[in-house]
Length: 72
Image 1 (cartoon, helix red, strand yellow):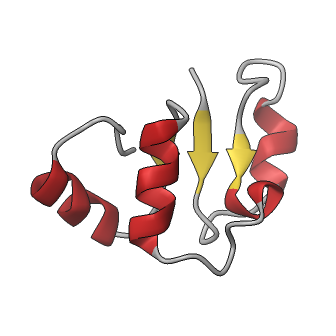
Image 2 (image 1 turned 60 degrees about the vertical axis):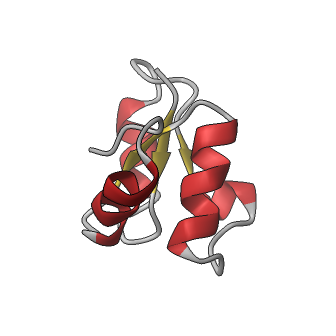
Image 3 (image 1 turned 180 degrees about the horizontal axis):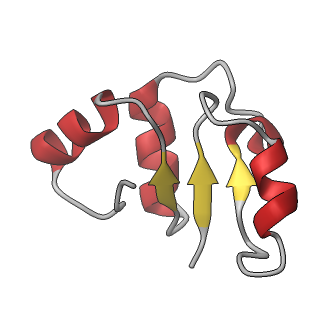
Protein backbone atom coordinates (compact mmCIF):
# COMPACT_ATOMS: atom_id res chain seq x y z
CA UNK A 1 0.00 0.00 0.00
CA UNK A 2 1.29 3.46 -0.94
CA UNK A 3 0.59 5.93 1.86
CA UNK A 4 0.79 9.70 1.43
CA UNK A 5 0.98 11.57 4.73
CA UNK A 6 -0.47 15.06 4.78
CA UNK A 7 1.65 17.90 6.13
CA UNK A 8 -0.32 17.87 9.38
CA UNK A 9 1.31 14.53 10.24
CA UNK A 10 4.96 14.54 11.24
CA UNK A 11 7.56 13.20 8.84
CA UNK A 12 8.95 11.29 11.83
CA UNK A 13 6.11 8.78 11.50
CA UNK A 14 7.65 7.55 8.25
CA UNK A 15 10.80 6.45 10.08
CA UNK A 16 8.70 4.26 12.37
CA UNK A 17 6.73 2.54 9.58
CA UNK A 18 9.26 2.32 6.73
CA UNK A 19 9.77 -1.43 7.22
CA UNK A 20 6.05 -2.14 6.88
CA UNK A 21 5.22 0.62 4.34
CA UNK A 22 8.37 1.25 2.31
CA UNK A 23 6.44 3.29 -0.31
CA UNK A 24 5.03 5.75 2.23
CA UNK A 25 5.75 9.41 1.54
CA UNK A 26 5.05 12.73 3.21
CA UNK A 27 3.80 15.60 1.03
CA UNK A 28 7.05 17.40 1.76
CA UNK A 29 9.01 14.53 0.12
CA UNK A 30 7.07 15.13 -3.08
CA UNK A 31 7.39 18.95 -2.95
CA UNK A 32 3.64 19.30 -2.35
CA UNK A 33 3.81 21.01 1.06
CA UNK A 34 2.35 24.29 -0.22
CA UNK A 35 -0.18 22.68 -2.53
CA UNK A 36 -3.91 22.85 -2.01
CA UNK A 37 -5.77 19.86 -0.60
CA UNK A 38 -7.39 19.44 -4.01
CA UNK A 39 -4.00 19.28 -5.75
CA UNK A 40 -2.73 16.73 -3.22
CA UNK A 41 -5.93 14.71 -3.64
CA UNK A 42 -5.54 14.58 -7.43
CA UNK A 43 -1.83 13.71 -7.09
CA UNK A 44 -2.72 10.82 -4.79
CA UNK A 45 -5.37 9.64 -7.21
CA UNK A 46 -3.01 9.76 -10.20
CA UNK A 47 -0.19 7.95 -8.36
CA UNK A 48 -2.30 5.40 -6.43
CA UNK A 49 -1.66 6.74 -2.93
CA UNK A 50 -3.90 6.44 0.12
CA UNK A 51 -3.96 9.77 1.95
CA UNK A 52 -3.33 9.74 5.70
CA UNK A 53 -4.53 12.97 7.32
CA UNK A 54 -6.35 14.67 10.17
CA UNK A 55 -7.89 17.13 7.70
CA UNK A 56 -11.64 16.67 7.04
CA UNK A 57 -11.32 18.48 3.71
CA UNK A 58 -9.98 15.32 2.05
CA UNK A 59 -13.13 13.44 3.03
CA UNK A 60 -15.15 16.26 1.52
CA UNK A 61 -13.19 15.95 -1.72
CA UNK A 62 -13.95 12.22 -1.80
CA UNK A 63 -17.63 13.01 -1.38
CA UNK A 64 -17.39 15.47 -4.26
CA UNK A 65 -15.17 13.50 -6.67
CA UNK A 66 -15.53 9.89 -5.52
CA UNK A 67 -12.56 7.61 -4.96
CA UNK A 68 -9.79 6.60 -5.33
CA UNK A 69 -7.85 7.83 -3.47
CA UNK A 70 -8.79 6.31 -0.17
CA UNK A 71 -8.56 8.53 2.90
CA UNK A 72 -7.38 7.43 6.34
